[in-house]
Length: 350
Image (cartoon, helix red, strand yellow):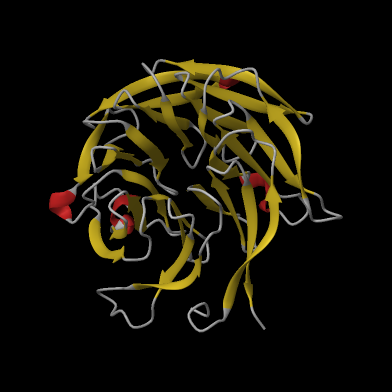
């Protein structure tokens, strides 16, 4: 881990303005990781719009290429690109999820998913792009099957959370779904076979070394054998599972608590994202961004993680989302209640 000994800085590349209310969420387009394709990401806001930002190959500066509006009637809380990068799903407090398609540079709303009783809080695609999950304030998680012709069919409504479900995330390599909630738990949903019903196979709660307050977000390392969760209890927790067992079809393997990172943020941690290189970024209501990596001194059985960088006052207000660019460049985007997005580069100070 060269990060541990390096002298690193989080360098602000650009501050992007345009949203007229808080920016809730960001999503990098996975198709833009190719060297010859400009980097693109989407942002969504309390101003009811989604903005598409693209980096100019010549000037390297970021510009707003499109504003997706007049579809959602309330806050857009979450956005997610399909694995191909062709479709963008947006979840809104108006109780709908919209599906947008990029048709020759123009984004068209090609489908609207209805069913949640009230605010939809998050949307997530599985690795193959065949399933979509949504969650909301009605305490439910919906699984939708992606059909030909931009049709989406709800195949199951998952009930089990006692409160508002904040985030849904699919595992990066397997069709296992994770949800985190205001009820302080993370639930793991799994289907024994392809046609079977989904059920909750594990609840990561306080009794299993889980969080003691709202769980706001979660993410996976590149391999998918570790999970990081962040919470209103001011901690980050790392979990581990034997995914080779699951991948070989040998039944469900439970997630176990590895370690807890505490004392790094002094207000709610809203967002966490694990880079492909193994750097965990966290963003919080203390307006700060923190970066962590697995440290050398942890034994094989008990890995530990350590802080490699802290960026105080990264924004003027709460940071709602931090997202690493999936490409080679060490770019991180952050979104805030201050209405701005910032693009950062993790650079070595020479």
